[in-house]
Length: 225
Length: 225
DNA sequence: CACCATCGCAACTCCGAGTTGCGTTATGGT
DNA sequence: ACCATAACGCAACTCGGAGTTGCGATGGTG
Image (cartoon, rainbow over all chains, first blue to last red; front, side, top):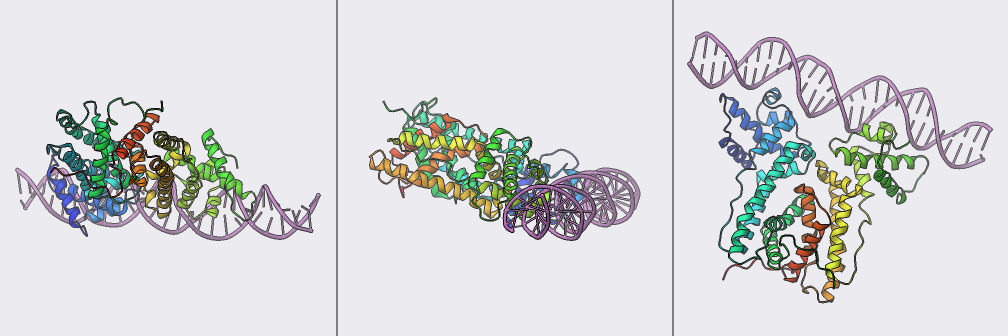
């Protein structure tokens, strides 16, 4: 029942899993198994990715037999989905520093921090896999993105009230432009991301928004007269 | 030896494959097999994705036996790599309309067209899979992106010479900002993309560049004084 | 300390990757 | 037209991972 050869960050994931497991039912030794298996799943996800993730390997890493895994989850997908859903929740704070510059920069930086954290890398491993064809997993991803969009709205609203941005600025468009370069570098171009990446994204997004290029129903680039 | 139940777009892929197969060696019936198998591979990639791609299925779709596939390619990965490398080449023209607006918009639009074409969707299916862990496939993807970066440079250079953009504008940063929202919507957020998406990206990128937010070694968003 | 849910274990089935030996067909040179 | 040979078809394998099943062992709870 002991998690073998797991780094500190994964143990940390295990702890993160333990707190919100508000499932009703007989909480015997079963809960320890659940935490151990899900933590092992995330660790395997980071180490080997989704395709190479073996139920047998996960079970061994969790110090549990393969059969036990199949008794608590229907199949491999279910384990992964369960491991991920416990992870996508309250991850990012909505900044309110008083200026758009600082708010956007903090938003971008916190995304970078999350994506490069163990949890983020586990999610990343799944995004970069055929697992997105699994509806439940695509739903997890969709909720994550929608959550980001929602969190940006108050930031944009406050900025407009302060007169820092045009009144017609589209919050969704703005956040998409803010986080797209970060996701692009990480998931598509396989380029490194750091604080500077976040800062440049914030700077560029702010410039575009101030110029009115992110306004609602904005016309396309004007044709030459 | 006949390609069965393949849509027109895939047949078109087969034609695209046929022209540049400048491989030396005995060109007997073997060449027909190669084209059929690679076309079938792309079709399967689009239909089922990389993880669910079966060599047996590919062989049947190509009207060929499984062993034949294994005689010409070492394994499943090699087939996919071969099918993709023949595809990433000369896909996009470098626009030179006379204005940055039109050039950037055309660049973005042509990317959208390519990504939503059969070839682009096949590549997309591989990007969204554990196949990116295969070095050769990651290399294909890297070359594709680098190719885009290279093509943007003259566009930016000409714009600077015309005085439309700041002299310090970073071409790579500019193109990244241009194509990131498109790739983000498609590969990460699973949102639809169309011409309007391309136009908005071009508009926003242009605004940011004009404001100097995409200059080389640009400082981060200025802290409050 | 006894009960019962839970777990470990071994032995399965199923399916796809990749291999091997041999018989069969098509292609190019004469 | 004919034949040598390279390429293909076919069946029968091995190997490993996804799930499943029956039974015996174990640990938490009253």
